[in-house]
Amino acid sequence: MDLESGKKQAWHFIRLGIGWLLTSIGVVLLVLPGPGVLFLIPGLTLLSAESRWVRRILRRARERWYFRRAMREAEKVGIKFDLGPDEDGPDDSSPSGPPRPSS
Picture 1 (cartoon, rainbow, N blue to C red):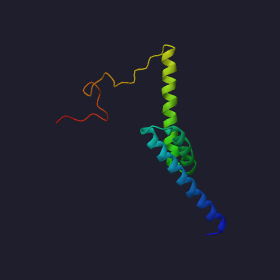
Picture 2: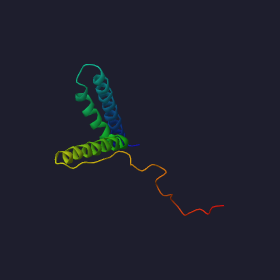
Picture 3: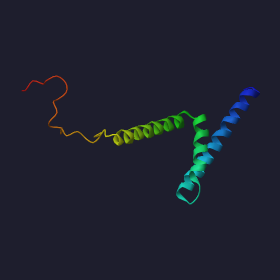
């Protein structure tokens, strides 16, 4: 391992450590009185820059937020969505696959 890759790896672990520290302080301060969001956002930002799974979780949360916002805006203009379970019960649906011969 050369010096340059060692520095790169060291900075990677330093950013991960600071990101986890800020994120954990933010989570604790969400429960306790304090500015939890002010620590949580920079911590998650650092973690997302260094970790794929954190980036994937944040992307899913952002997509859910956009979806909810779009639903609210659509309902404001009068478009109604019913995302509940279907009215059809399990007995009302047709069987999937080829028909079976009766014996």
